[in-house]
Amino acid sequence: MKYVSTRGHTDRKHFCEILLEGLAPDGGLYLPEVYPQVDAATLESWRGLPYAALAFEILSLYIDDIPAADLKAICEKTYTEDVFGSKEIVPLRMLEDGVYLEALSNGPTLAFKDMAMQLLGNLFEYELVRRGEELNILGATSGDTGSAAEYAMRGKKGVRVFMTSPQGRMSPFQQAQMFSLQDANIHNIAIEGVFDDCQDIVKAVSNDLAFKRKYKIGTVNSINWARLVAQVVYYFAGYLQATQASTGAALTEVQKVSFTVPSGNFGNVCAGHVARMMGLPIDKLVVATNENDVLDEFFRMGVYRVRGSADTHETSSPSMDISKASNFERFVFDLVGRDASRLADLFGTQLAAQGRFDLSGDAAFQAAAQRYGFVSGKSTHADRLQTIRDTFARFGMMIDTHTADGLKVARAHLQSGVPMLVLETALPIKFAATIEEALGCMPPRPARFEGIENLPKRVTLLAADAELVKSFIRSRVS
Image 1 (spheres, rainbow, N blue to C red):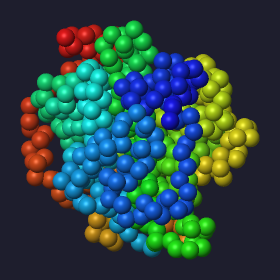
Image 2: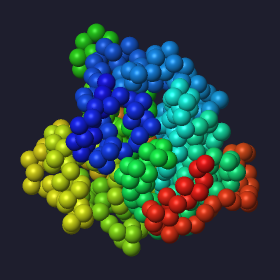
Image 3: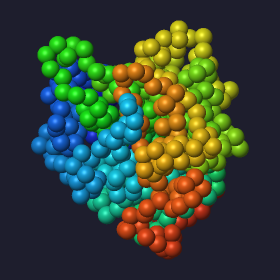
Image 4: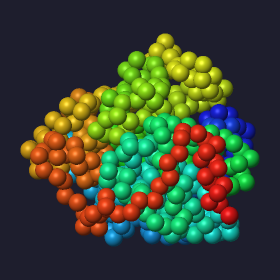
């Protein structure tokens, strides 16, 4: 299996090369040359596998430069009941007829990002030890990626983390999770701006090839293919839990399911797109946005229009306060028939000149809903408060603000006979103020996080300037 850049760079690379590289040299994102196919019989053979074994089966389709025994050991080390709180790792709970929540937030930092980041930390350490090298990870977070990355990388051999985040835009709990870490290999940088400014800095530094090579810069954002492919696994796991075992003729009439995914940077739902391209029987992929509705606007109208910092709303589902969806490029690459020159024109020339591109009259876009199964919807602060209240009143279950956005939008796209799986994104404690506003009480807090907001903070404030971030990295790398 080799990987190509969405922008057309001619090199074809193996998994471990792009694991440490992040962005391609031309600024594109990596995708496999072809999506490996999973037929109905193979899918049935995976039913009942432990999550770690399922992860090995799926990841081994994409990774051919790590010995199978080593990859299996990495999966078994990563996905354990001790780390994720249950044997299922991603247990499914039915809320009402046909509607399920897939629990992805029982890892170390209480967010779905742990599902991929714990694996990524172990992959990084394995490959760096094998090469005898070091890696300086530069990331951007709107809330959960940062803590998931830092908890996954703390103490790892040969790894330093430099994590940017928008100053004052995360919840107090999210900030405390990151800024209270005192590990020598963890560096937090608060940027005066919004998440998109942080993401732009990461891309700018990654596109400085001389700096990237000299300081061995890698990424953990979902622009890193390794993180995204790890997320593909829980789509298969959710499907296998939601459907009954098939026998005989049923193998030719496989049960379909739909997934609703709270979306900001398009990485989580892009993993669903990959799973669908592999042959997982997904009917609809429902993109749920908050007031920052760039993605909803595209799937409804065919226009991708990025917003500036001043037009990016600060909301009560802050991890989705994103107006430039990095992983969207991967989907559009498939949408335009993997035409790298067309993709480069859309995401390079047109976005730079106009801040938008329009595919509303494009024949490929017109067929996209049917071919790729995407639909979308938007949720507001009032919507998420009502959904949190309703879910607690009817099911005795607290959900976080992002999951509430997903559940609200999911109900607009239900189809008879097609299970709808809503991906949970975080536990309620990460957004306690809004939960208290909705329910009049505070959400439960795991004992290990008691008093975290009062711990000493270790963070550096910088202006939104890639050169300042590069100078900071230079000063911390020997």
